[in-house]
Length: 84
Length: 84
Image 1 (cartoon, rainbow over the protein chains, first blue to last red):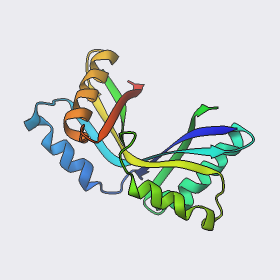
Image 2 (cartoon, rainbow over the protein chains, first blue to last red; image 1 turned 135 degrees about the vertical axis):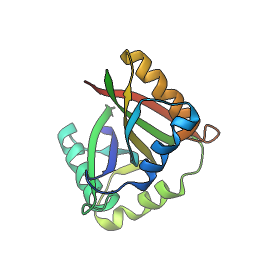
Image 3 (cartoon, chains in turn green, cyan; image 1 turned 90 degrees about the vertical axis):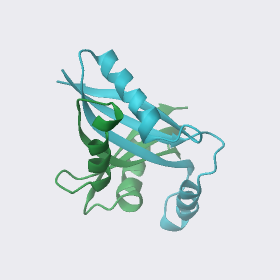
Image 4 (cartoon, rainbow over the protein chains, first blue to last red; image 1 turned 45 degrees about the horizontal axis):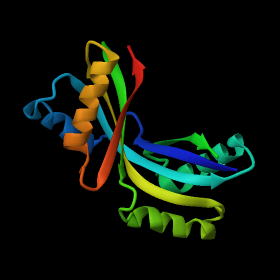
């Protein structure tokens, strides 16, 4: 079976996020009020061929931690968004 | 009310994604088989102060299209992940 996976990689809490801070600072001047805690990260979508959803999720999580993120400063979360 | 929002920005279908292609090409040598259709994108998390979930989502979607993505080559999708 094929599973569509979404991996979200984000900076760990406490790690400085200059990109997010810059976006947040620019928002009021651009007409957006009341937006806080902006954090920028990465998103990856891909398909995994696996026997079960649990297997696909485990593969995706392992890939996310080993190759798509830097575990020292980033956390990653894989989830199945669709099975076919 | 405060709503936590996740915005996912990804390249439109058909737009070349060299980062995703490079990751996908590297996977077999790194021990991951059966992974296809890798696409790299961006993820943003933030909090919106709004009267309703629909209002928060509309604000986030407008922000995503105007400021967080390049609508010519990217599509963006905002969704509420938590209300408090």
